[in-house]
Image (cartoon, rainbow, N blue to C red; front, side):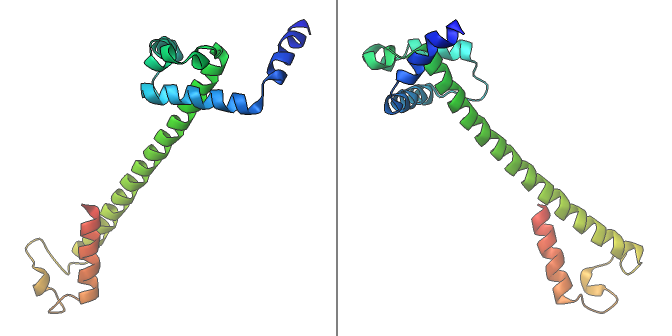
Length: 147
């Protein structure tokens, strides 16, 4: 109870606009450092203290370590969400390509199993004399998607 009564007035007394400004300043520091999702607090904090902006502006030097840590966590969380979204996008693209390749493969296996075409056949010498243009365009588009 004593700790709460000691720290509560400090947090309540801060003006919201000042805390937002402090937050922006700390996030800007980490942007300047080009912090990525693998950067740890133990390496980021000493680097912040060596920055030119830290030495130049006394307002930034007055920031408490907790405020700097919160800015680091927020910035890292945003970078991590961006990384996860990019990873999901790459995985979706990979799955789409694999699905297209599977479709082409199943189509070709079906044609071979039906004995309509063998390994030495040309598309123009298929049983119907010529391949249906819609089927041919579907195969071409599926092959292009598989690449």
